[in-house]
Each structure stands twice: as C-alpha cells, then as structure tokens.
Image (cartoon, rainbow over all chains, first blue to last red; front, side, top):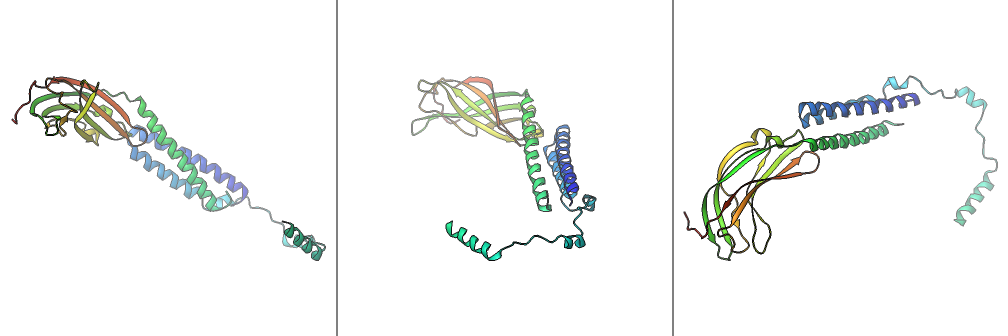
Length: 97
Length: 170
C-alpha cells in the first residue's frame, strides 16, 4: 500500500469498527438478545478485516514516485574515503568498549 | 500500518477494546433495572423436629412456595440463583441464617412457578435453641449477568414458630 492508501485504510478501519460496535449494541438492546449483539459485532470485525487488511488495488491509487534508474546512475552514492584507517579505528573503538 | 500483519494487529486490538466497551455498556444499563418480584411461602408441615446425636437441633419441613422472578431478568442475565433462608436469633448469635432450599433459573420463561417440596437442606442449629423459636423466612437472589458484576437482593417473607417440643417422626 502507498502512503495515501494506508491513511485511507486506517480511517476506514476505525469508522467500520466503531460503527459495528454501535450497531451491534443497538440491535442487541432493542431485540433484548445478547447473543445477537455478539454475532453482529463479530461479523462487523470480520468485514473490517477483509476491507482494510489485504493490499487491495484501491489503496494503491497514489503510488510512490521512485527515482528513475537512469537518473540514479548520474548521481552515484558517496563512497567511504579511507577504508583501512576507518576499519582500524572501528577496531579500537570496540576494544575500548 | 505498513504491512498487512501490522494492519491485522491494529484491527484486532481496536476490536478487543470496543468489545470491552460494549460489554461494559450492557452491564452498566443493568443498573437501571428495578425489579418488582412477588413471592409467597408457607410452611405446610414440620416433618421432623429432633435433637441430633451430636447435640444440635434439626428440623425438616415441607414448604409450599410460589414466586415470580421474571422482572429480575434482563438481556444481560445468564441465570438467577434463588434460595430461601430461615433467619432467627439466639443467645449466642444475633443472627442465624440457614438455607433451606435453592434453585437455579436459567431462562426468563421458567422464572414463575409454584412448588410444594420438602426442604432441600435441613434447618440445623448451633445448639438446642429451636424449641418454640420464631423463625423468619427470607428469599434471597443472586443475579448472574453475562457481563458485569453479580447483583444480590432479598425480600422478607412470612414468619412461623417452631413447636415447643420435639416431634416424633410423622
């Protein structure tokens, strides 16, 4: 999922779950049936998981723009200048510890 | 929220918190239930009134009871435990409570009934104080909810007096 998709998924998750809880409690209270409340709530949780957890294409509408490979070659990653001296200084640091 | 597993974890956590919330709300609403139950009990006869071998008085009797417990049930009730206690006073104890009969009611439809039964448990005293004693019968109930804490209540019913002397087996 891309960033926009994750934000959207989180918002949908919270709305779905709270709505499931409220609907379950309301139905259970009106029908005077505790088991009904549990069933509706369980159904709501499963539905929420199905909608928000998998990586649906709907959540990939704003894909990240990675740098083009040809551009990356023009700007090489900076190398560490003095390899041997840096490694020996690392060894000294570990001995001190 | 980066991986599916993290999202699944978030769903499970929020779902558990909301589940606790709706169960607490269901339990909270129970406090507004004001029950109005009716009950009547009558001692039909004293079956046996004797002194046991180890020195304590013992009474067995037959009771005729009718009660309507339907108003104790809410949608959050699992079962109601009801018992009848004989209460009396002696020189050594200011209050004695002895359970004579109990019953578990699991459905609202079966909460109203009449029975004529011998006492499930005999009335045994700590001593020999029961001759001529005035005994009060009190109906106690414990409402066990599906979620929440247990609610107790009681209602005093009729009184009766035990005979002045031991009876032989009738």
